[in-house]
Amino acid sequence: MRVAKENGITIFTVGHVTKEGTLAGPKVLEHIVDTVMYFEGETNSQFRVLRAKKNRFGSTNEIGVFEMEEKGMIDVVNPSEIFMAQREEAVAGVSTMCSMEGTRPVMVEIQALTGNSGFNNSRRVGTGIDHNRLVTLIAVLEKRLGYKLYDQDVYVSIAGGLRIEEPALDLPILASITSAYKNMPIIEDTVLLGEVGLTGELRAISNAKQRIDECVKLGFKNIILPKGNKRSLQKEERVNLLFADNVFTALSLSFAKKEK
Image (cartoon, rainbow, N blue to C red; front, side, top):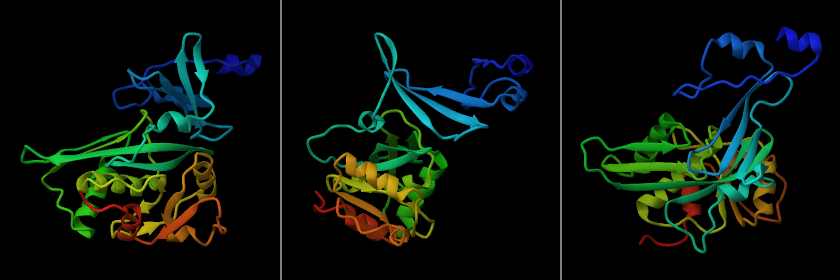
């Protein structure tokens, strides 16, 4: 740090991370530097995410998405396209949301699978999401909507290897689990956004306008939002905005077909 300041140069230090995903070694290293950046990616995926965990002179949650090619790491201009699976028709257990990674909106796909548990304790497995939050949301489905998931294994995954930790992910997770449990696909070209409380209510989310613009750019037709966001949004003609004040109403708006 002293050499960098005296000579006006930039120094990059490459370190390792622990199994818990934190920076290895003494914390003093993390404290003295101006920026801490994590280079993330799945072993079997060609995509890598560069994420700022600490930044003294800028935003902390910005990401850069890169693809490994023959010439090296190439910047991905539109990350939403790589995190969205291309399907000809809707599939049960899949929902779509628009996540805010710093100031950048990114479309992601949430996939869920449920099945009868062969053990006394049913499994709850989440990839790319917080496990404790997943368990809490399943409890909301059981208590508020009466779903019997105690004997069901529940698996939830964020497609593309991205990890999301923002509140707007709650409603898409519940919709994916409900879709998989009832074998009912969500209405095509529909995006769900909303934080879910323990009583089943939907709470307003941040950056609603930026998320809507990204959804419109990618051709989505319906967006389900918490009712609390209605006052801050102007009348939208490019897309059909649907507002709900609780989980029951939001899920009712998400499904058009009868249960198979």
